[in-house]
Each structure stands twice: as C-alpha cells, then as structure tokens.
Length: 104
View 1 (cartoon, rainbow, N blue to C red):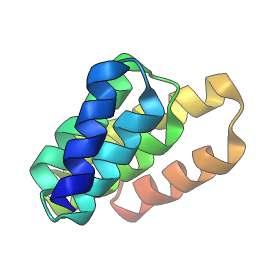
View 2: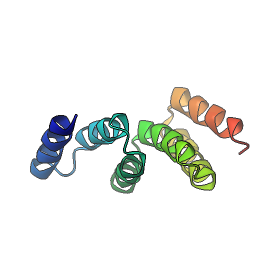
View 3: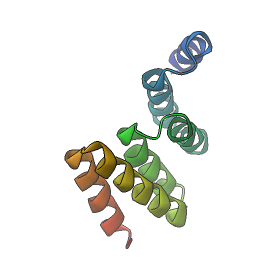
C-alpha cells in the first residue's frame, strides 16, 4: 500500500487540483489503517472541492472511527448541504442515514 500512496502523492504533485486523485489517496490511506491521516486528506478534499460528495461520507465515517463524533456530525451536515445544492439525492440520503445513526 505504501507504494500506491507514494504513487498517488506523485500524481497530486503533478496535478494538485485533481480531486479524484486526492480521494484515491484518502481511501488508500484509510485502507492502510492510518485513520488520522485519512481524515486529514478527506478534509483537504472538501476544502479544495466542496462538491466532492463522497469525501463527506467517507470522511465522516473515518471521524466516527476515531471517536470524533461532533466533527463527523458536522461533516455529514456539510455534505447534506452540498448534495442538496448539487441535486445528488443518493449521496444525500446516505449522509442523512449516517447522521441519524450517530444521533445527529
């Protein structure tokens, strides 16, 4: 996994605005077990591209695993707002469900 993470970091150096590469980096980092680093990458995606709906969902789940429930709730709420603006009803319903599960 470390090789894939380094490869994705290299791709991002070449194309720092590519949200898809950044999302792939977040998922690889998550899969490697580094939850704190993955949460940072998900937050970075949202800061750079607030329309990238999957980052809200997986970022929120990562924050939940870290026990950072208030931050997870906030991320889910931000994602719900973003998906309402974009019309992404599928991801919005996933975010609403995730928020409801943690009492949001």
